[in-house]
Amino acid sequence: MKTILLAACLTLIAAEAQAISRYDPTRMGCGRVQATIARQGAVILRYQSRRVPGLPLYERYVQSQQFCTMGEVRTRAYVPSADTKSCPVYNCKRPDNDRRFRRRFFHSD
Image 1: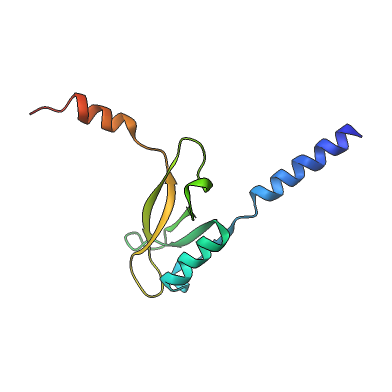
Image 2 (image 1 turned 60 degrees about the vertical axis):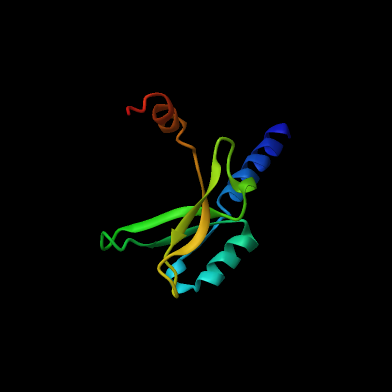
């Protein structure tokens, strides 16, 4: 019985992890992209690179810091949308503390 209960819990966790929605922001206006992220909390936006034809780009975009994992911070990003080349959104990134450390202590004048 415990084995069945454990398997059911693991199945629910796996199903929840795959529940994130995917959208093409170039088929939506910027306001709709932002509203979709706000409504769902986190989404994956997938679109074609403008620099490299045929290269798909995708990333997870979030509504607030609570959707970032521990050690990540919410940072501003921009995606293309149907009505603008740069629609402001947010994603989660790990801060580059090593870079700040080098700049602060090893900066040559």
